[in-house]
Image 1: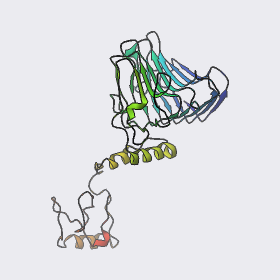
Image 2: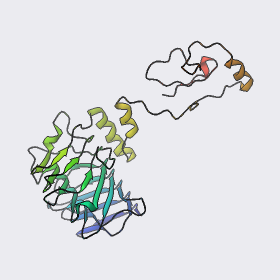
Image 3: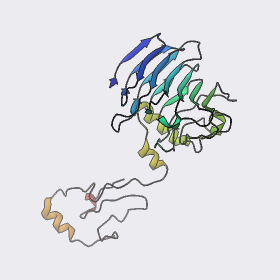
Image 4: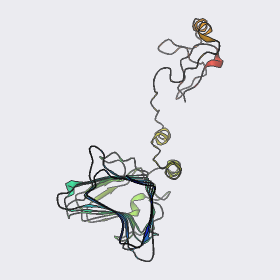
Length: 299
């Protein structure tokens, strides 16, 4: 594990991971030159069931060059690269690339990308293929389970191969998923994506403005993606943890609770238990017996 460090250097690569499967890199600060690569990941797959993890780091590359990569993930030969890139603050001061992905064997590399701030780069994510397809990079809604939540604001139009939120090139048969991400409000998100050739990058639907606001707070304050809040904002009902989740002890003890349980019900659930008369659709109420003062609401 590489955690709670500060890397400040003018070196070409600040932190190199080579054939180091399952390495965890988290809570670090990396400050380098604009022409540098802050984190280089080569042939780093799983250790047991645990992929390589790059999470909650702050990366800043400064200077006039446009050749730098905040994170480069690649593989060569028969090596395998399997990485989760979660909730990093990634900035090349609008000069370089936030995440650069390339490979020798397409089948040997996959990345789950979620909750990262890519907005302060010239290219947010750059995917380079093999003239057929490219790596399996799930930025939201794909086969690897990414929730999205990446921040792609701050890019201008028209886009090009050298300036866009997402660039996919040399991959005419690749469909890359990047849904539920944050793009400028009120503007078609695909207008910030550049695809060179026939490939596809799916960015619809993005996060709505309220959900983008909540997700940004989660990223900045908690360092994670707000799956539970996003579920609520979608209008889905969270799973109830089970009967009695918030049952309140009657203040007068078991005898009083037993007597209260024999009182007639003013409103009954399908199981025959009491519920408060004021319960409304969309709320979850505890099925507790007794005076109304002892009722509590689960949501």
